[in-house]
Image 1 (cartoon, rainbow, N blue to C red):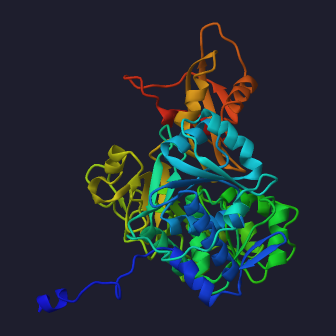
Image 2 (tube, rainbow, N blue to C red):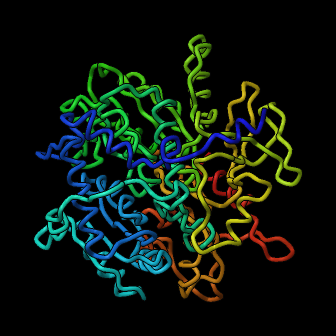
Image 3 (cartoon, rainbow, N blue to C red):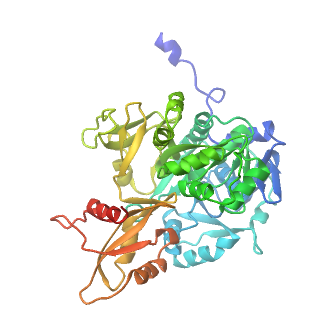
Length: 531
């Protein structure tokens, strides 16, 4: 009878809040002597890492960090930034990793909007932070990682954290990640402990990760907390290896020296590796397991990486979904296809991760699923535990994103007959260049500041190296004169490097009767130039 089932209690013995910090506690017991991080001459075990995390957590608490406080990090990939992914949540704080490629003005906005209480910064990025703080209204405390003015070492002198590492509620915020500002200012995406826990577990299952993998840290940790791979590593007692740089020669040297088994990277990184003279002459053994997200890698790149001994799997996700929630899971039947057909299948976005409840392609207006015909376009919509809590301090945007009981991605796609999703276009005018999202609105705002420009629009232009790059289409004021080099230089002074237009066209900008720019016509114009 129902009353007998419902009478059974939920309590401390049989219900515990899910949080990825518990993975580290377990790793300290199960994998205590296994190497957790390798960074140059630094090698630390999981036992040592857990002790450092406990001390940093206590040190952060001594600085006043407690539940709900935002702790920002403007830092390069490093063991220290990896440790913060555990130490900050232990205090109840919320970690906000900031894109190190942003300009000072946007960083200042993020620090203000996030209500940042403290910023940890890599020594090499201290000048950028200081410039941002000079523009910000807030005045968070600053802790420097490394360099002559290192103060992180002071936190490590604290006594280890005492008491539970788990949150009171698994719905508590664990991270605050900012989008690339695809519709103007970046939005703050709030992650919860439960979602981070399940994303890490889902990655182990989806990628079929065995114990003690050696994972090369290429994906920036400011990208969806490195796609959850940091928390995943603790589950399987893996080793995180930090290469000296993302130059192909450094990556290959690291792979061979440390016997790397896994890594993730944007398609542009794969392309640079595939075309590098440093590439090994013989296929890597054992074969590397690689995930890539963003624009699908060109078939020629997939062919070259395959010949080098890399099994590349394309994945899809958004900041709002903790990173990848679709994977192009290879099927046995694909073994019978020729190289071109196989590359076409592998470039699809794929099927949902095991910890994602539903990913559908739906008609925007009716909410009905599109047919599995590979032709009818709809919008990718997602439902599951690895969807954000919402947008920080933006209830209206949160309600709009969750309209209809699913998260609306803004990406247009088709559903193939085999159930694999394939992105066709972006509903938002986002340019994905080398794995970085670029807001056309933000670039256009800068172009409009140029004294010679009366109208401007920015669209994606295909690029063999970066996938796509910003292309500016501009109209000049009457009597004004300028050239592409001047406009590009003007933008470079005001934007992060990856956002600067790589080409400029002087052309009338097509508009609707109500003055809305017809970007589809501009994309056709730009694409025709490359045919």
